Length: 306
Image (cartoon, rainbow, N blue to C red; front, side, top):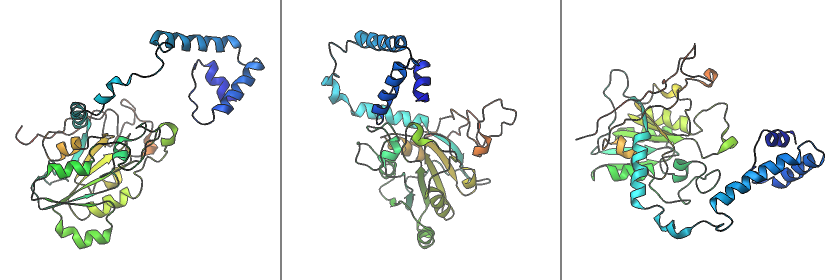
C-alpha cells in the first residue's frame, strides 16, 4: 500500500499492473477513502488522461487502423533492420596477441562449427517486449533469419556448416581436427523490466562451458547476444574474436554480413564495459575508471572488395 501511495503522490497518472490490478484498485480506493490520497489528485490524473485521449481522437476512433497491416514485415523494412544490425554490432577483440586477426572469416573454408544457445533462436535474438511481454525462446513466435541461417547463406557452396548447440569437451576432442574455425553464439534469455534484474551479470550456463570447450580446441569468434554488458574477462584469453551483438532482432544476416566481411565493423560502445560487477557503478570520469573496454571503444574492419 505504501508503494501505491508514493507512486500516485509522485505524479504517476496511469498505472500498468497486468496481474494484481484488483489488489491495486482496492489499495488505491482505501487510500482515497481515508484521505491519504486526496480526490483532487485522482481528478488531476483523470483530467490529463482524458485530455490525451480526446486529442488523439480515441473516443471517435477507439480501435487501431488495420489498413496498413500488410506493410508489416516487408522486405524493405527487413533490409533496413539488417542495416541497423550491421551498424550496431561492436567488435571488441580480433585476434590473440601476436596472431593475425580472425575476422572477417573466409567464406570458402572447409568446415565451420556453429555452436551455442543463441545461434539458432529468433526469440533469443529479439529479447523481451517481442509480441509477448517477457519474450520467448525458439523460432515459432515470429518470422526472420537466425544467425545460423545467416551464416549458412553467407558461406561458399563448398563450406560445410556443422551446427551443435551444446558441444561438450568429448565432442570437441573427437572433431577438432575437422573444423577450420568456429562461431560460438551465446548470451542471455529474453527478459523485460525487473525480471531481468541480475546482480552477477554472468553469461548463463551452458554458455561459459561452450566457450571454453570450443575456443580451447579451434580458433573461434564469440558472438554475445545480450541487452547489456556481461562479465567476459574470464574468457578473453581463450577466444580469438569477440562481438557484442546486443539484441539484433529478426535479421540475423546482419551479423553474418560482418563476420564474413561483406561489410566492415564500425560500431562503438554506447556504454562502458566493466571487468567485474564489483566495479559498478562505473562511468567515464570516475577516479578509478578501469574498464575492460572504455566508452566509445570499437575495433573496425574493412569489407572485402569495398
